[in-house]
Length: 580
Image (tube, rainbow, N blue to C red; front, top):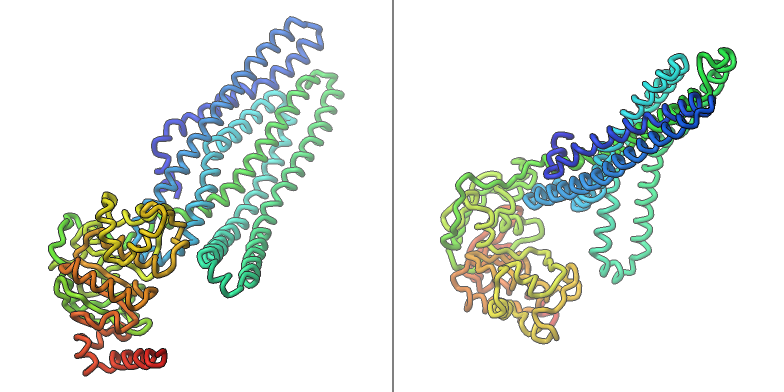
């Protein structure tokens, strides 16, 4: 894990190495200050040598200034290095997630990925800053102060052995018991984030059904559970404080007792007052740095959990990879499914599509009909290679989709998904996702075909009109048509509409299909629809049932010889008669 994460130090490697060096220099100057202070008392003030006091005092000031200089410089560099590490790590995670296939994303929830890229990265960044600064400073200061304490009085230094053994045992118990609990807590964080994301995304539905109280109670319940989990973990970590206090007070009491006895009984020959003062400062240094080390262990326990979760994402094998010499041109929009089996879990015993074989001529209009769960979306998602087939092959333009560069394939196989997503910005910025260099004339032509130009003309700012995050200031039908226009700007060889006109009226739906025939006749058009009227004029209609092709033909042919299609048609006609 450490090796994996250290790769993201990147260009901050030099200051990462320099920071511990500055910390060592800070300690070296700081550790001699108590030693000189003791000599001022014993060799200066006690004998009345003020010249010695002044000289030694100035030396102490110089050491204090140098220690301050090195310490401040180290702190600044540590902040820069840790912030840079955090930046690189977030970028690395984002780059990795952008390469994920749909199957990879399915293995992580969106909320979990958000938590890993925010909370977990912050935990690791804090641990990294501690590692290059305090993790070097505290042990070196502890060791140096311990050595200087032994130089001052070896017998009295034996008290530290007891303290170190006590704290070491306590820290080991705390860390080993707290780590599993923190991992469980962060997993529950994912669930809370998922609930918040779902609630905010569907806030209009929540308000429409007056479910605010229900959602609030659900969130409070999840928050309370997370609180209990955190308390359970923090209870163990909280023991660190009392143990440290016990060690500090026991050590201080022992030093005062035994140190005073040594001075009195020896008459100042074995130990002087200045030496006891020096020893007390070193004692505080030792105990404070022991406390810092204990805090490091606690922080590292949390960071280890976060680091493992981050590395899980970084180590995830991307399901979709490009071949060594990918083909960079799609000749036409012919599509061939050759004995295709497909499973989201890659389990051949649980297939979502089974033995699908069909040839779709270039430039044709193809309708796809089927009940819920029949495999319609799975069928079309294999064409732009959002998923890979489990068995068989899918060919576009006579070439297996796995032999194309992903960018090439997806630029020429344009897909409007079931869930229409618009992004914060302007209409023009959203449309230019299809073609970043699209002119206003090109955008206008695409919007005319998608039957959304009238709306844009009615807006005061036209293409520069504002779009809220998720397109919440547009209706469902308007979002669908803007997404269709965005897809058309890619000038694809294949256009797939995955139930993408469900929110528009039948008249607009018909106008969109008519525009497709007139303006993009050479583009293969695949339309998944629930309404028979949306596909009745298609060149070919594919009926799917439980992942298998149940029938292929024109509207008239399927009415005559396909029971499923006829049943859907008759049920919709009865509904239409009833409406009339």
